Image: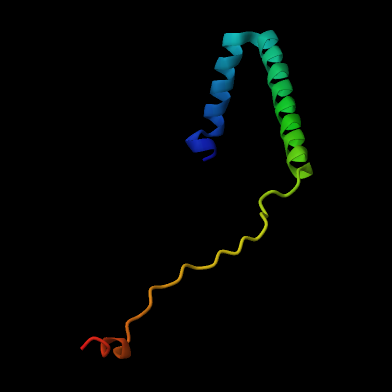
Amino acid sequence: MGLSGIGFPELLLILLIVFLLFGSKKLSTLGKDLGGAIKDFRKSMKEDESATNALPNTSASPEVHVKPADAPAKETAASDKTGG
């Protein structure tokens, strides 16, 4: 089985019905329009990819060193002896 359970005979039947509904002239026009749309989409994707690659790498931000907060001082046995 191929495309989600659609076999070759089913695909031929669907194409035949589409052909009968729209006719060869309309299908030709639809095919050209669809091909042009796909071509324009691919072209814009390549242009976007080129523009993205031309930008400086902003994901590598400068290193920021953060000093960890001072932990509270631990009470020791020596500090307990002061009060009594």
